[in-house]
Length: 238
Image: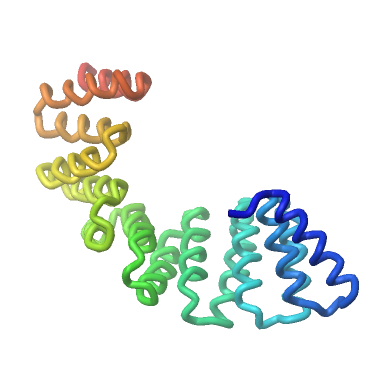
């Protein structure tokens, strides 16, 4: 693990290197990486841009530029950088994945789906990419497809609590209450302090008319998140 002092030392080294050779693209990329790790995003972007100016077909530099833009909330610019990375390296799974995330942040869910589908095509055993695809589908109320995506996540990583929660919400969207309850229970088994899921579980119990079980979730929430517990209480007694 590198500490801030290590990145500062490396940054000084690479800055000296580019003064000696202003066409040293890899050193500019390293300047970008060091600044990014230090939280200096504007300087990181400048470093990656300098590297790309010298070496336009550096897919990794384009990707890193996109990541820096995304971390600043500049998602439109991030999208263009990720697209350039993919143009250079079509099977760059992480670039497809981050492209999908940037689209998602802008509410462009259909485009996010297409990007994440490419990511999982290239890396079919990446649970996190499948999970993001599931979330994309869920946002468009494409619950059946969301269910399949979350099932893929669970196949790869059975103890992924968020995937079980997502699966439960997708089942709930289809009014398949029994399956939603089972999925939420699995999420809580894995992550016993998963407050949002206790709330969702309370909601689904209410929908099925099981007020007693909804109250049980309220009692558990009281010890974990009083505000969320009160929201559930108000639903139970509205």
